[in-house]
Amino acid sequence: MKGVERKSRVEQFSPQYYGICALGGMISAGSTHFASTPLDCLKVHMHVNPVKYNGFGSGLSTLYREQGPFSLWRGWSGKLCGYGLQGGAKYGFYEYFKNTYSDVLGDSNKSFIYFISSISAQVIADMALCPFEAVKVRVQTQPSFAKGMLDGFPKFYATEGFTG
Image 1 (cartoon, helix red, strand yellow):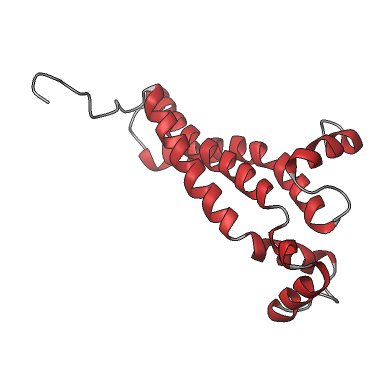
Image 2 (cartoon, rainbow, N blue to C red):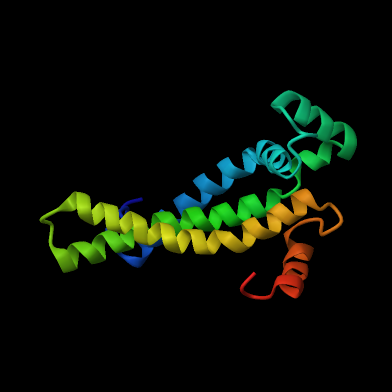
């Protein structure tokens, strides 16, 4: 359109920039972990009962036969939401810390700045993931515990409390 000027770029290290980084992390981490839910469900069952679920093929077959096809997707909401939050926090906070530490330490040692930015972001990201992962494992290993996140979080909080 003539006479209409559009801002097509987001300024680096602006709130919009951090938001886009976080959104990218949420989409990439949430979707890939969601897609791997059947494998994760089998892995959790193999840890809980290694005698019964002693291999990949036989484990999937046993899980499918005994608990039905939907059992392979138990915990999907925890993986989608939890790893989505983890990815968003990891990508967004990494960029934030990279900028902050560069301002404080200067650009003398970029590798060190990237390293401590990554560590700082990962700590926050993992704290965001932990409650979702805890409920997901309960949903996967104790079918009577809850159907998913919506009914699992209140039950988990009631039994484990905030520190659980």
